[in-house]
Length: 240
Image (tube, rainbow, N blue to C red):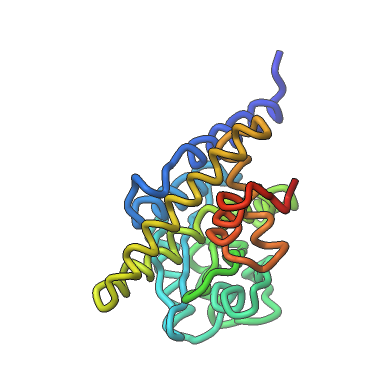
């Protein structure tokens, strides 16, 4: 007989396997981000609303969300000029409101979130990339929905979100500079190459291969595509 925790682990790993199989070269940037937020909202305990905030040229915006409430709460923070999603994007550190009914900061925003039925908010910064900063935001409807294990899952989802976010702005700037479009395409292709090498060399799933690249990116403060490029060119991997 399987235990509930075992069933839960299978559901979570299946979700990350799904993300791991996505090719950065074969999907649109927008669809990748939407998939990340949809899967996160489905898999995280309590089925919270999730979104991705990006800050480009000091202008925040929501590029994907699993529900209207996430968009509403993101945009309120943008209007107020303060909140956990903006703090996470600016500082590179997780920001949160553990209990919106008893906030220690961002009182106006927290009060509105509580009225809308959101008890707890966590914003996880995206791993470092050029051009943009950002955060993956989780709006939980229960105050006990974000234990330590859940925070680790949010961090893993953030790693999947950062590559298409960065590439989205490379793609947009390609309207003015065509070489940026090629850079975006090359970036996605080299990440897929590096994933394939890791999968074969260490017998990893696609998800674990990408998480290995993301971990080295975070530990060395290096863009994911640069970690992948170095591995493809030299065969060396710092996380081994």
